[in-house]
Image (cartoon, rainbow, N blue to C red; front, side, top):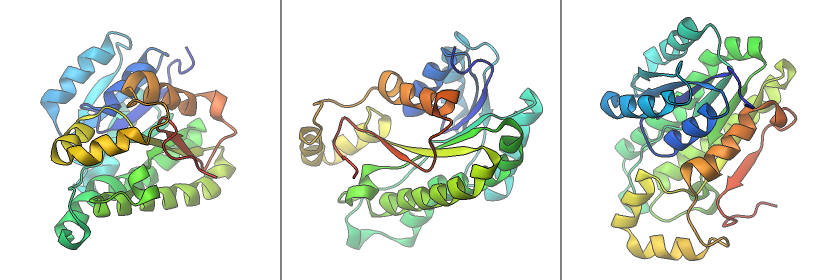
Length: 250
């Protein structure tokens, strides 16, 4: 039980990779606060997680509503009395060729990914100081490699990487560690991408040395468990490639 009684807030908690992470963490004793705008789907995930962590809860929250982002953190702390780990997982974007990208596309990607990550980190800081906690943000090979059709998504993901490194340097004095996971996993987003760009999907699969897509719980979730645990206390500012070896950083 590596995460016994740790309170962990996960955005985008109504499905996909978040569900896998939540289940992996719940099985290690964590209490999950799952945040998403989709209440119906969120309640389904809540029921799954509560089988292992009865105190876990779903919280409805619209990440595009910037003024109310701090209240998400406050509601979680009000219910549980503390916050140990913040996981900024949520992100929505549209896949288009570079020349077709619009301001609205950037607004969606930054509005659901970058800005919530930034403002939730700010709101969580006082509580993470108290718990000497952790932040897990999400990067993407789309940004690292410049994946075609991913202009808005890649830009927001690289911006998240940048502020994560800055915060890792500034918040180290509080014993708060901040890292990023860059995953390749079977998720609803990947499934939509596969339908829209099947040739690119198959070409990407061939670049994965381990020859398969990651599993949200068994692969991505287990790394998230490690980063949220005390075993990772001396790791900060790092991008962890959980992608079957498709990108090998040097």
